[in-house]
Image 1 (cartoon, rainbow, N blue to C red):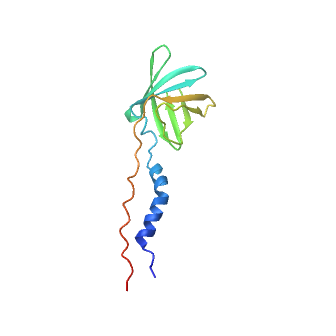
Image 2: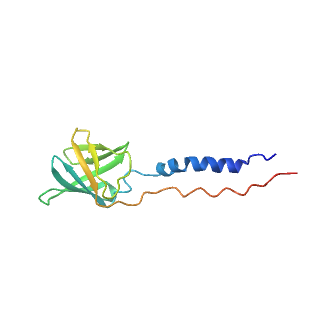
Image 3: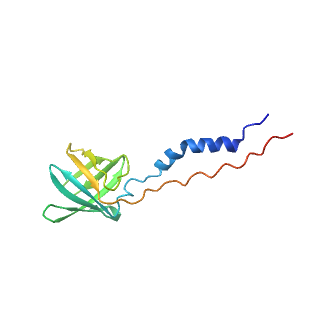
Length: 137
């Protein structure tokens, strides 16, 4: 009678958890660093550039640049100006061109449409299971 191999059992478990593990590798903010997102709230469009190091630039409808900072932590994406900060739920990576409707902690609904995104890191696939040693006689 053939005994189940520990390696085969572990390979089966790895296949079951691989999708969850790959998603767990997403670092909030990694896909928007160096990118811009068009944010529309109350009918006003403001492109927001998410620069490295937590710096942001908000472009007003008249073309003025408003410096800000941004953070992505605790399932929130926050933008801060010297006088105010506002945060939105941030539960999954943004995707280029995909509109996301979000309501801020100030209860302001808005639509976010990324102009571009960076690839999201994922774990490499698990190695193939070693061949079964076969039965012992």
